[in-house]
Image 1 (cartoon, rainbow, N blue to C red):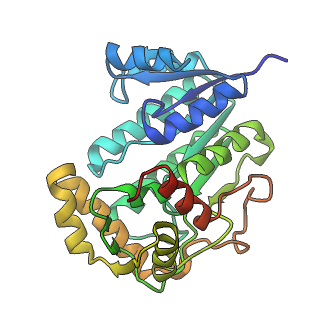
Image 2 (image 1 turned 30 degrees about the vertical axis):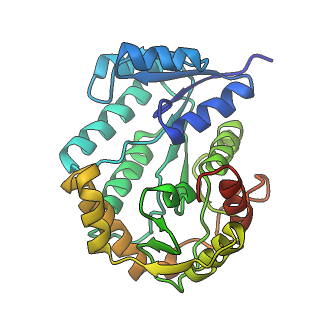
Length: 295
């Protein structure tokens, strides 16, 4: 049986790249946008069919969508409302014009049912609304927080694990590898169309418990420090710029104040975790230490 063709947004990045590689391993033909000839060559070397273009190039989007029957859509981490609104419209219009059979949309964060003034969540809700209004079959994937965020410079320094969440708030973190498994499962199960799937690990740990896992894996004491979102923003600004840093800080401020709304194992209304083998947080930390990511 011939596998279908899938357009993967962000295939040259870490998250989209993980999805693309799992699809290729499953025999799918994967297509992706590339902003330059250099990026296109990198995609080709990974077995991905590139189309030169970007989210602001309507013609390139149309060409990329015409080559696929299924679309895995995720947007870049941006907080410019004007630009993101335009990108959303371009992507959805291209999918409609190509009569896409299924849109699998990764919001890259949990999006609450109620409206919020938090920029990051307002933009994700705008994305979801546009997809629903398109009339196309869709599946929403809503991850909690990626474990790979802990790999950012400065998060683990010596005996301190600093992150902008409350120390006693349980979080069901998810790895990028496991999130990709959710994406592939959704792509392979179009009968889930119309559903919102919460993407999280099989367990949940508090910040203090997370530090204990690092202590055990590293063989030294590690304490958790609940980083103030203002300090988090200040640390990110030199690397990501003021707008993106402020957007991320705003998101974490919302999470800190609304942690009780975050999905937990066994409580999600819609989940496919029974069919996707998730990695326990302790195992992820142990493997990351063994691979030399944390020292």
